[in-house]
Amino acid sequence: MTIHKAQNAPPAPRPRRQRVQAIATGMIVLKGLAQLGGRASLTALARHVSENPAKVHRYLISLMDEGLVSQDPASSQYYLGAACIHIGLAAMRLADPIRVAEPALLRLRETLEMTCFIAVMGNKGPTIVRFEEPGLPVTLNVRVGSVLPLLWSATGRVCLSFLDDSRVHLLAQGELRAASAAQRAMLAARDPIGHIQREVRAAGMAVVKDTNLQGISAIAVPLHDFSGHVCAVLTVLGATGGFEASADSAVARMMLAEAKAISAALGRAGG
Image (cartoon, rainbow, N blue to C red; front, top):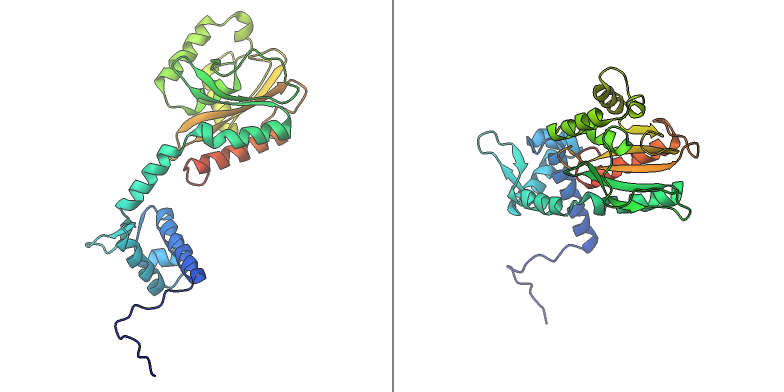
């Protein structure tokens, strides 16, 4: 007996591997569009992802069906659609710097055997919100909830230098007015606040030795969110002389690498 295939029968589903590869290619096209600023012509997008324009067009049609991509009827350019906005907003709500940075804190603690913490800018100054210390910690009088000075701590100097906030500058001026002669001697004689800002911005980090806590050195680096705003500060500290506290040290390079990875996870383009 001969069995005739129905003329209108749906096509057989593609093998799973083929479907997964198609998803991967679709994601390459979507990410390529995002890398071009979220809007591009078919030609520019195909060139950017190194694919044939006809192939890219097929994927764009599928992405448009899902609301991930839209097309401007006037210019024919493609741009990220409303579904991408919803996905991005959901991801942003989950992009908590404390949660994202926690694995890095544990790695730094174990690898460097140094105290490390995350701080955010609070109403009274940089405030420690997550704290990790090694098995043989250095005796410190700072813990979760401790507020650090802007002028004398590495953490504070990062906030002072990278946060575009008049409130931060006012707090720093208040610290300077209340400083003792010994504290002032640690700062530049002329324009001490501006000197700190220029030095930290040039290095991309803050390094202090014995300025906030006697016998303690620290290195702090900024963490950036999706908008490029500094949302938190990653800091390691230890006994002065127990590690090389400089901007070109192995510890500083490790800190910068961790900060770049955390910032990328928080959505910062380029890490």
